[in-house]
Image (cartoon, rainbow, N blue to C red):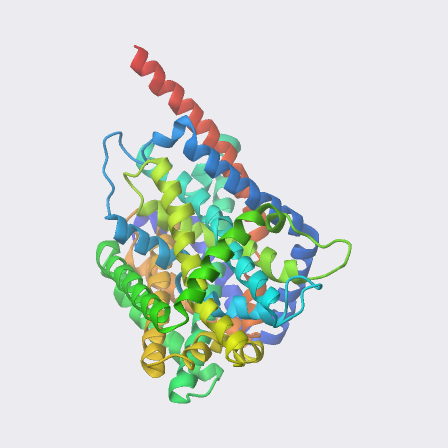
Length: 502
């Protein structure tokens, strides 16, 4: 093992914490699930307002920054060029940030809102319910979720490639916390644990969906043993990919993911209700934009309704737990782009692709239920993991679409896990951009183990609740990162201006 890992307490402490969670979860899965649920309820009931306000601040900060005088600053040397082509870059962003999550929720979320509406006054399974469902799905997968990733990625990229410093979370808030090693190690350890939980949640969701797809196509039973088998195959695959490095395994997998996504997207768009999909996209976009502030700050203290907690607040907490990994990965692949280009790509292009995906797949499912009398929403309510495959039942070439989607989910999972082991290696190797292979293998094993434990502890509910364990304190860290980054930009800009005048 490389010296920078061997002498790093962050590696040992964070690995011990995750291993302890794995052991406790394996020995007492039901108790583990109960504790996770209590923590979920505590954080969302008492701090839901904080999550909503923080994410709203993130979006405002990034948009203002992109149009400010700082927008032209490069994430790298003054005359540096982007390291990857736009297509490859977007593919990497898409694979790391959305991955299997969007494939899972692209149909499942709008159909869930269609069946159980976000507003008590809206009748379920109606035209109005369908419209609200699409608008809310756009909102949840739009710029708000991506702003959380973008903050981390922007600051770390600036540190690594502009200031030639370590791309660690602790380094990003050093102007505030100072040179205190204990605080720095605690922050980095928290970031590692948050990353493991966020990645494990997404892997677990993908494994559940793959099991649903295998049941739909090959009548493979839905069982924990099948899910453990999927996890095992996935582990071997992404460890092999991880050994090839960033410019081979992850790069090629990201291009395959984006290409296969576009293939499925175009086919469903053409084979499905094309005009309805276009109308749904435009109307959904309008509803998203017009309701943005309302949805961003919506709470229900007067009615006691739990919908916002179960959906919006969960999503923002999940994104926060996912952000150290996605942000660090986005930073790694964004060298050479200006802050303005970065914000445009991360905050506009990626969410736009997500909204198009939801309009196409979710819109097709909604159309079939509304116009053709199908029961996709009821099927999703029974088993949310089969949403995509139920929609394929009403399209031509059902089995081929299902098999391609199973493969896509698998490659997304492998890409996410491969990227995560690399980033966790960086985070626990004092910021080294070339972490030791053994470090990546350790994290690959622990991520897979915690995902299996979460599936044992209660499936989807345990996956959703445990991701919030580290999200609350990390939201505070993200706000500190904004303050710290603003100070860095202002100081560096003044220095550059003085150098030019001299």
